[in-house]
Image (tube, rainbow, N blue to C red; front, side, top):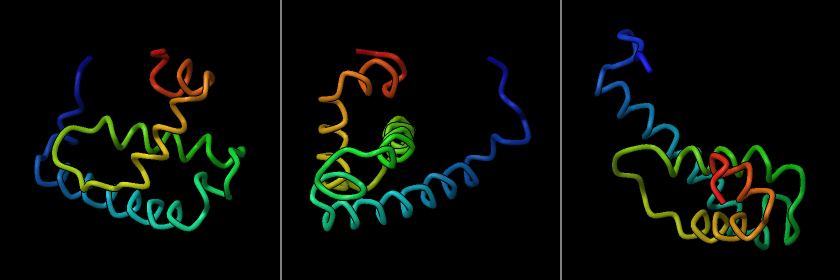
Length: 92
């Protein structure tokens, strides 16, 4: 896979990951209030795009903040067969 040379600035990559981490931290705060999933205690359609984004964030290289509610949320997602089959890069 060839990388685009216009998108290889390490400082810009670091800034981008930091911005993404700030957004995920907002989700972490909402999960603390929601009861486990994005819209409450039960899995809904809203958890699909958020769960995929959380997976992408967790997969990024480098240091990221420890977000306890995100970690628990990801564990709950991984209990779902559909997420294991499709949301984790197809890895069961």
